[in-house]
Length: 97
Image (cartoon, rainbow, N blue to C red; front, side):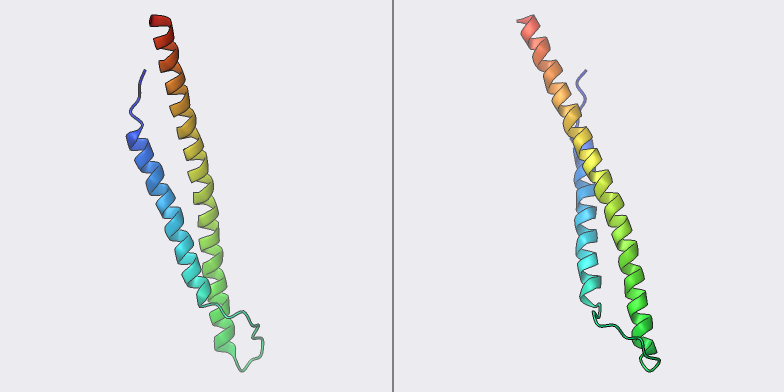
C-alpha cells in the first residue's frame, strides 16, 4: 500500500500559508492599536475604536490558535504516515531480497 502523499502535502502547505497570512494580518491590525487607555467621555470615539480593535484581535487570535493547532496535528500526522509508509516499504524490500 503506497499512497501518494503529494495532495496531502499541498493541503498542509496551504494551511501553513493561511496561518502565516493570519499572523501578518494580526500584526497589521495591532499596528493601529493605541496602547494608552482612554476612559473619559470626551474621547468616546477613541474608546469605541479601541474596543473595535480589541474585538478584531480576539477573533483573529482565536482563528490563529485553531488553525495553528490544526496545522501542527495535520503535519505530525502526515509525517507519521510518511514514516510508516517508508518503514513498511523498507521491510518489504528486506524480506524480498
